[in-house]
Length: 73
Image 1: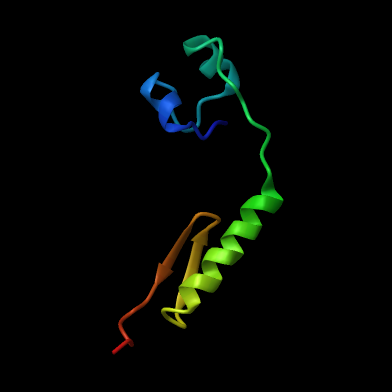
Image 2: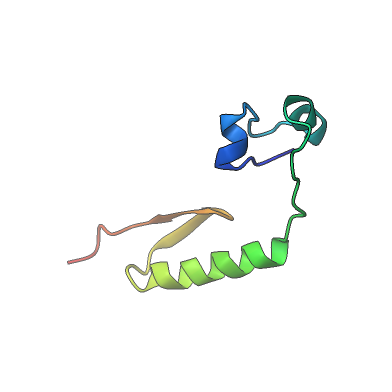
C-alpha cells in the first residue's frame, strides 16, 4: 500500500493503492523505502514539543496526536 505524495495524488494515485496500481497510472513512479526508525524519532520529537504546551497529549497514530488545552490558563 502506498501513501502518495501531493504530486502523486495529482496524478490520481490514492492512499492504499498498490505499487502495481500506481505504476499502471504512472509508470515512472518512484517508490521510497519506508524508514520506521526515522518516523518514530520524529514522532517522539513532536511529542516532546507538544508536552511543552500541555501535559495531556494523546498519540492517535505515528503522525497524529490530540493535545488537550482545556486545563490551560
